[in-house]
Length: 86
Image 1 (tube, one colour):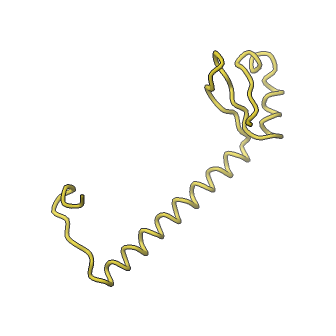
Image 2 (cartoon, helix red, strand yellow):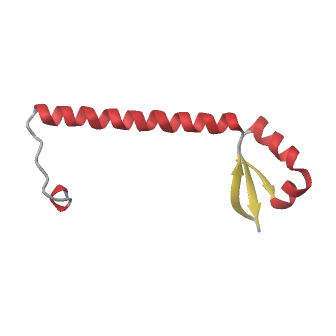
Image 3 (cartoon, one colour):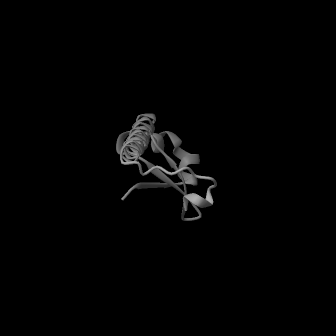
């Protein structure tokens, strides 16, 4: 279960909330008892960005491998429109 804090907590003791985010992970900020925003440490943000980059790279490489396989098997077709791809 993620840590939570309210907007009032931020107003009263933002440093404590920031320290919790650094020590324990993301802190979800509630506004009117509903999740509104999240506070995460810069290290956590960098880790998430790296994971995203790795996932995008893996997807790109998989697409290239699929293209190369289809090209080798002469399965490529020339598309005349977007509708012809569907």
